[in-house]
Image 1 (tube, one colour):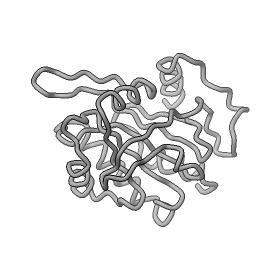
Image 2 (tube, helix red, strand yellow):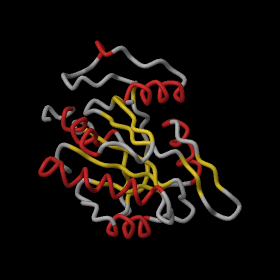
Image 3 (tube, helix red, strand yellow):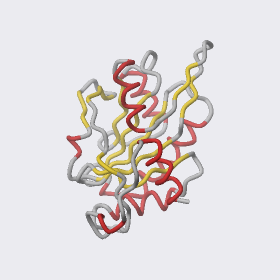
Image 4 (cartoon, helix red, strand yellow):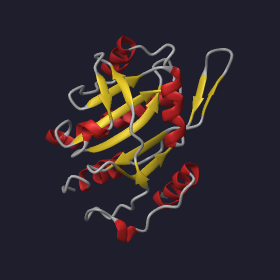
Length: 193
């Protein structure tokens, strides 16, 4: 299953996946390529870049606060993973959730969304930015987004796992991923399993 997602991610990015022997560590995870950087605003109004998380494993996904279908399921599952990481959450593992609806998801809206799901904001950033900045990030991560005239937003549910060197290692597609597998992948990138 993971191999199919890696190949899909590579196809979306327009490149071929790196061979497993190019791995930067002993995690056993392949290297897809450099994770695209960004500059966005967090739920507390601070500026956040992906580069500032070098040295930590990152799980990055896309959500929007008014979603009533898959985003709540995805965020709740990620909160379960957060709880399973324990003391390494925030210090060695970071979560980043980027809105696909920046017109409505202000930092305050995202803070309330985070609190609703019990997100530990010491290690989980909920990000927004200008519509142009968000659209550029969506494209660079291979996330499809369609905005209906009614205001509904349909988007790819994708979690990108990024290693401490800023390399994308694996992507989980959909909400049916195994939270324990995601937790193990993230901890393997920190030298723990």
